[in-house]
Length: 217
Image 1 (spheres, rainbow, N blue to C red):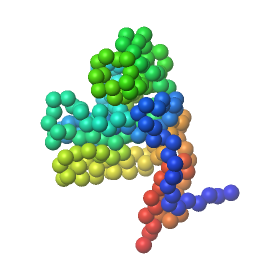
Image 2 (cartoon, rainbow, N blue to C red):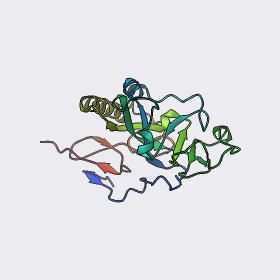
Image 3 (cartoon, rainbow, N blue to C red):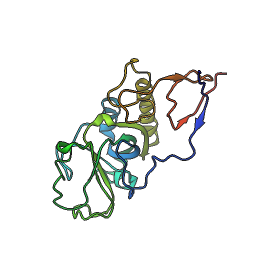
């Protein structure tokens, strides 16, 4: 039996966790990353690069707390900052909630894809008490929007680049992706089947939480 699709939006998105809720292994979540405007275009076009070290060792540092993301980069003027909204496939998650945790910097070597510091943890260096995440594989992270940018013109330009990149990724090359579905961002081996919306003809995934159909005139 064939199935046809038009526009829809899931009313209850279970992926929108609060910062104090434990991320489930294999889930996909909305998170944020603060960076400088000078690096923003490179990140959109080429993806993230792992930090060589940090509180949780090597990886890409992000957070479900947008206020925490707004603080970065440290010692950078607010007008020179941008905060990206992300979709993150966390994979297997390790909670790090105290100083000198035995896997604080070796979680990836022990089979985990992401480390999570819950809010108000016993880690003394996080004085704000805000939660933090570190993802090993940058390909698990997709920039989906610009959450904050003081300059409206820059924000508009960056959003345009993000949309172009998302469109290019969604079209793909017809082959299965080793990093999950590129349309709904689910953490699955390969990808879900690509179907066409019967109204606008756009490639969609039946597991997407939202498809704002733009009907042909």
